[in-house]
Amino acid sequence: MNSGIDLQGSFIEYLTNFGLPQGAAKAVWMPLPMLLVITAAAVGLLVTVWLERKISAAAQQRIGPEYAGPLGVLQPLADGLKLIFKEDVVPNKTDNWLFTLGPVIVVIPIFLSYILIPFGQNLVITNVGTGIFLWVALSSIAPIGLLMSGYASNNKYSLLGGLRAAAQSISYEIPLALSVLAIVMMSNSLSTLDIVEQQSGYGILGWNIWRQPIGFLIFWIAALAECERLPFDLPEAEEELVAGYQTEYAGMKFGLFYVSSYVNLVLSALLVAVLYLGGWESPLPVDRLAGLLGVSETTPWLQVITATIGITLTVLKAYFLVFLAVLLRWTLPRVRIDQLLNLGWKFLLPVSLVNLLLTAALKLSFPAAFGG
Amino acid sequence: MFQFIKQVGDYAKETIQAAKFIGQGLSVTFDHMRRRPVTVQYPYEKLIPSERYRGRIHFEFDKCISCEVCVRVCPINLPVVDYEYDKTSKKKKLKHYSIDFGVCIFCGNCVEYCPTNCISMTEEYELASYDRHELNYDNVAMGRLPYKVTNDPMVTPLREFAYLPKGVMEPHDLPAGSQRPGQRPEEAASK
Image (cartoon, rainbow over all chains, first blue to last red):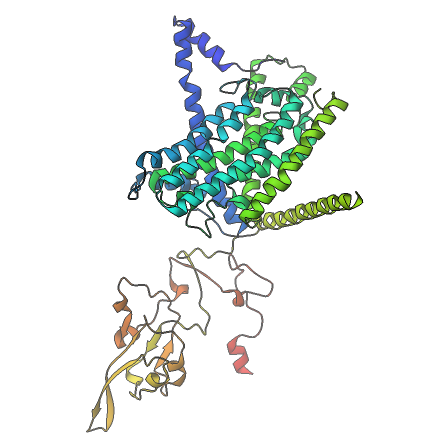
């Protein structure tokens, strides 16, 4: 397998040619991917907000944002600016530290999780060996933040909202982790790169969704619940509650919750794309086509093209899932809290366990197809 | 044992059914994507009020005979009729007339019962003001005619649902000369 574009390697080599020591060159390189991730996540957030508003409008035969920029693309930017410049209201007798820390704790792990998303063979910030496990661990930090902000608000309804949000996150984390476990079992690795690698070679037929259809559904349902998206958005429940745990928040602290929910949605969509829809792999295997045309895999222009296709495809797959989430939002009514917990504990958990056992059995009986 | 298997089977059947219904719902919402928005982009577009629209009341000062029928038929006796009995001509002479549109419910009873037809309903509905006392219209304010939507160069007038040709649901880009189904009032009157 060729390694594709190695941006880090060539960047460091370029700098060392100028006489910089190896370590210094690496230090210059290091902030670049971090900045890139934050920018990419922020842009992804803006795009998602815009898409959500536009798709919601289309589903309701409205027009949606139209006057801020062409087709209203600047509307999320305007929303964000408004939130930044809004007065930061802190209610009386709140725990100031925890009140501020809450949204921060919710946001940081989500942004941190972006380091695991591969957009190509070398287009990933870190290839952590425990990749997907790290994501599961990071995503379970968020409920602490929610609980913290609910508790620190000095408002019993905020506290109740925080408790409900935490209960929801915790109960859906288990089916989520179990469906991820089935994938991990098949690819014999926790690394996101290896998971995509294992799906490559056969184009669309090699993707995990064909081998893990139940897992795919469970993961998507649980991810929606983790992101508090509409069929499961009880903690916020715009139409019924004031706002749940974020009732007392205003300005950018409220904005951080907003940011975290959308960034988390994009992150979940990206992870579904990576775990089940073959990550950066295209529906037709590009390297095979190149081999048929007699172009070497190491040709620079081919590498640039495959990298571009890879990034585009990952983003496209993720945004297809975001579209699905928005469509689901206007299709399904909100579940009650008892229905939510029933679905989580009595349906998703046993089904994901069965799915795990089934995967194990299939792996033992057909090691060739299920990554023995 | 069989009981248990039956239960599992029923549960699976229910789950599949639920998934099917969700799929149907999704196809409905997806179908809405390709439909054209029905929203009227107020204030750039406005609907043309129907001919029987009950908007702000118009008052003709010279026609009024100060009979106060409007006050009697009004559910809350809202119109204020200020007149003086002129002994020489033995007629009531109207001095002021006013209706507070902040209180009026636009029922149209006064219009219905006015013996001289000096009050009528207009198509004006944009009565917003910064002070509720500004809604208390006197005879001068009520004597003004509203600006018609169709004459406003800033506004694209749109026809209401009942005024569209048969089978058309969309007021945008109607072909010129298209008419609503049924007879027009003048056609009905000429028969």
